[in-house]
Length: 143
Image 1 (cartoon, rainbow, N blue to C red):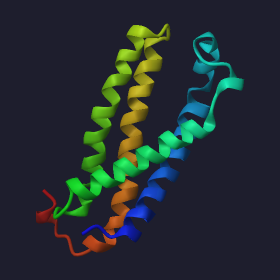
Image 2 (image 1 turned 90 degrees about the horizontal axis):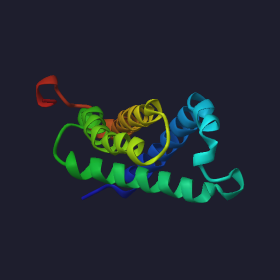
Image 3 (image 1 turned 135 degrees about the vertical axis):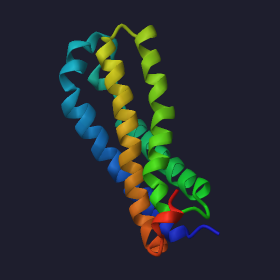
Image 4 (image 1 turned 90 degrees about the vertical axis):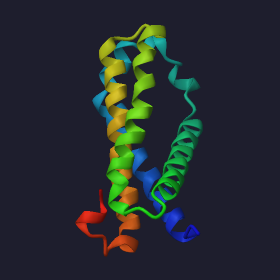
């Protein structure tokens, strides 16, 4: 049975990590690319941060729930591996955006990298929260 308190704490931490990662990646690293392609995006007045934050909350909840289900009975150090797998899955569709949006290929590639890295980071965060339960893991049980 899932520990609701630990799940909630992990989901909140996953949301915070997601929010910070997205803010740094998209708000700073890619800011100039977004400005250079501003004709493609909604005007600033139409941007809805509530919807963006809702998507981040849902991502954090789904990611954390998946971690608790996929790794049930497995060692918690697999959180990074879980992040790698989910990151690969979520990164691939970003390449397709180049086909239907008039954006530079570099932007799609950076979105791919962002999705991948964000999942790895969130996987580490969630794994750290679940680590206390798995503190007796031995190296041979990780594989």
